[in-house]
Amino acid sequence: MDVATLLNELPPPVPQDGRALMARFSFGAEHARRRAIVVDELARIDVREAVQLARERTLALAKGRVDVMATIARAVPVGVLDTLLGEPHAGATAEGRANRAGILLQARDATAGLIGNALIDDAQTVRNTRRMRDGEEIVVDLAGLPFGAGARACPGRELALAIADAVLDVLRTGRVVSTEVEYEDWPNLRIPARLEVDFA
Ligand code: HEM
Image (cartoon, rainbow, N blue to C red; front, side, top):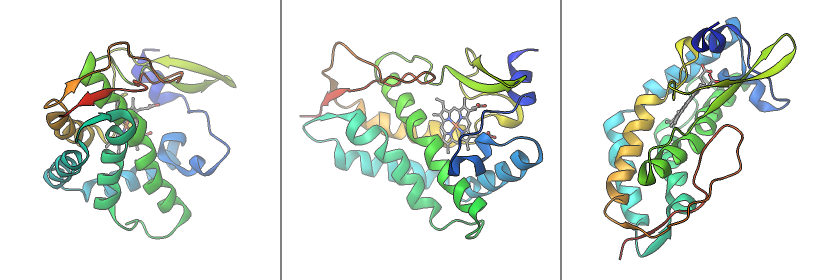
């Protein structure tokens, strides 16, 4: 099986918490239904409005010397999505709420990684993901597929890239001060732990 087939034919491991209701951790008909909720929620966001808000909020935070990973890279994308999504469109069902929360969860670290890595070297942020095969968890390498593939590919790709670009436009007016970059301790994500930028 090639990687795209693996990603789509095998179920993901299911966490034992509210995340089990999220599209990302579902399979088959449930995945399709929950993904439709996510796609519907995301379709309500006007990308130009997201870009403008991301720019304004980044400008407000980019003052003096800041660790952009701690103050901007997560806070701005998640805050913009949260503001623009408003109340869950799918209503107050547990599934609707879980998938609205799932949008923020999926966006948070991946978009922060995208922003941080782009500022320093462009490394692929999401390096692998997991699936279940014959009752065993397997690691699927995402080299060359930074946003996954097929019916499970990232539905936030366009929005994530637009928001990251808007944030980066402002961050690039500063000077990266950090020289030795350390990475957060994730099995699947490459995210700079700190990135000091001087906007003085
Ligand atoms: C606006 C920001 C983002 C949102 C709202 C978002 C949302 C999502 C959602 C809901 C899924 C689950 C889709 C499904 O299972 O059908 C997903 C999957 C995925 N996303 Fe994103 N995402 C965002 C940013 C990113 C970024 C920046 C990256 C990469 C740098 C990324 C990489 C991926 C990958 C690789 C998958 C597939 C995971 C798998 O198949 O196991 N996402 N995303």
